[in-house]
Image 1 (cartoon, one colour):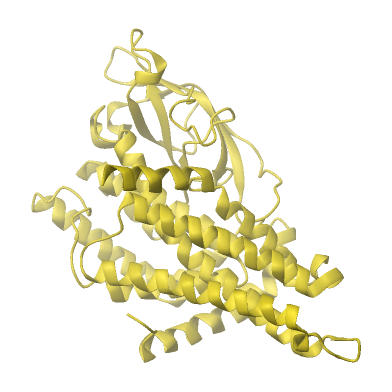
Image 2 (tube, rainbow, N blue to C red):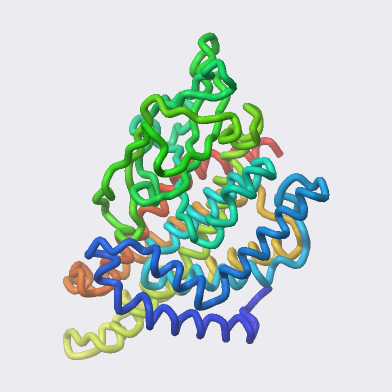
Length: 405
């Protein structure tokens, strides 16, 4: 794939009209007025028939279980068109409001995805469809106040067997997207069996409902960017979870490998977000370079400004080509390796941060003001170098993949 098709370009125009009508007029409230994004997300689903698409996807998931396939993890060919449409949707929204995409991706991608990948049929029937259709909002809780990049090694949240086939959960999670509002939470912790050293304990994942006794959550945390994506802290104190809330109903079903799969999927999806941010920054900068006059002429005539614009276009082209590769791999029924997904995420995140910083610089004092959108996009871009694995962790993943051959 070397270019968007006519059909995809037409779809892009339709999405852009939705963004102009439903997101742009509410951007101030989404970013600074504490307006949760969930009604906008649901309107997006209704507008583009995504609820019906997700119902069809759910039926395929259940059908595969009936056929003994076990999950949706089997690769199938021909999914590139759907992937392309999803990428266009993500990138177009991220031209204005990357936070909405983060909230949406964690709910339908990470939370539902964890249950789809490793859950039993009964668990999928109970939790997956409401998450996929946005009837319920999901949160995927792994990060802790003292863990950060060392998510497993520093994990302190525990599950202890209660003697009746269930578990008692304790721990605190932070930086949890959708945490303040989530209806369904995937809580990741370590099995404390009383004898295994903390670093060697099994990783377990439980599905919890919002009204679970002993579960408390904070108000949305104040943060640098992605204000339209609510982030919070979750605390569990002696929470009882039954065996059927353990993903896969097995202590070996969703461990480190399950979480790694989730991270790989998340890292690939970030590329579409980056394309939207870079594309919008470039658009704003080209327009400003034509209109802004200094020393008697438009600043676009100055060579240093031209250099900035040229580098932005190179970044946009490279990120778009990475996205095309992701679509082609999906269409072929394969996918990126963990190392390749990490490489894509590393490049896209760094390039996007560089573009947004240069956009602020190109706008000068105006770029530092909130009324000019480059200020918001710059703040939003920074977290892409941090969440789904920091740049430093991506480098480690890439190097390990190379050294393994």
